[in-house]
Amino acid sequence: MTSPAPVRKIIHVDMDMFYAAVELLDRPDLRERPVVVGGPPNSRSVVTTANYVARKFGIRSAMPCAEAYRRCPTCVFLPPDFKKYHAVSEVIREIFHEVTDLVEPVSLDEAYLDVTANKTGEPSATRIARAVKKKILERTRLTASAGVASTMFVAKIASDFRKPDGLTVVPPERALAFIRPLPVIRIPGIGKVTDRHLASLDIRTVAELAAKTLEFLEEQFGSFGRYLHDIARGIDEREVTPVWERRSLGAEATFERDLTDRSAIEDYLKQCARRVFAELTEEGNRARTVTLKLKYHDFRSITRRRTLDEFVRSAEEVFALARTLLDRTDAGRVPVRLAGITLSTFTRKERRVVPVQLVLPFRESMEEL
Image 1: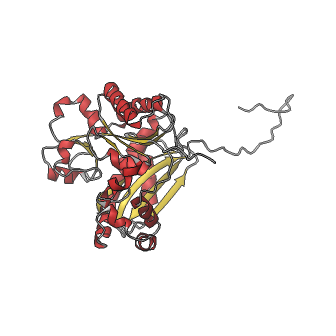
Image 2: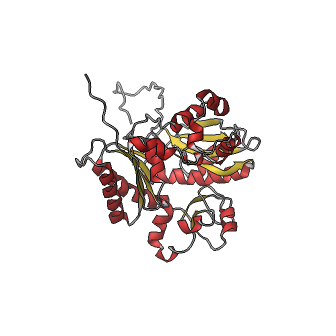
Image 3: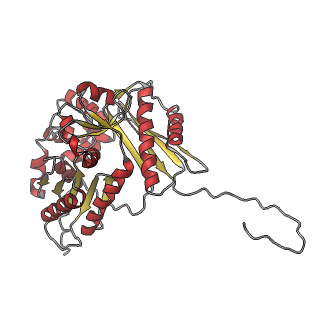
């Protein structure tokens, strides 16, 4: 008789207001002031992140900077510096790998750790999470929030439960009790549009979502309905998957409201292109494929991509390609709730060399130059 598999111990670590927090290390004079990392307030750029003082005014990531300014004219707007953020992120990831090799980065400021079996020999995931948070604070002067659970989904929600600098532990036997009272908007992947749709169906909590059948949810949300059905029942069989070799690099955002103005979408894509190209360059990589991703108001996702013979050379070229790909979508005619750019194909295209026969005295062949 085989023994049952051990209960997984998953930690989700989420840095607190990461980009803003890194900026405040250099600008401690701004700690008590509302701070937005993003474009100028008179531009169509969107907020990358905001500190907690600014969030009290309702300012959130992906909100137009102009809207953030209207909500809080005293906000300080700082341009993003992804080279700096990447350097700090590398320090944090080193800490993760001191604990376990099963680390799945989600972004520069977020990762899952499977510590079921770990390098420290510590059986308590709670104590490991505390130690990780302490090391991050000591080495970066930044705080992180962590969630501990037996599934990635519950760990993700738990990490957001007591921000900032929080630690929430959800044992397996308490997982359903933990998620059922939560508003459905807390489920990863549910944005404001989905939340409004769920509200029209009188579904406001995870418990009410769990009461719906799979057939009903698939009828309302298509393939996304199965995800909602499983998650509401605490079912999440995903495993923490280390990324040993990056195959792509991208960024995307769900907008505060569905966008019908194509120029507003282009403004976000321009900022997105700068971000992904800066991260690509910082990693020492080069890419030949640019992929545009859109999600329409009705949750249909589409991608358009182009692969070049040579590597892209600048953020401006990435944006130009993305804008061309945007021509092949319904953006501007159909409301768009999410947009993003991904760079991939980090290898050079092999050129086929057609040999040319040359008549050379006293030589039978030529060495490859």
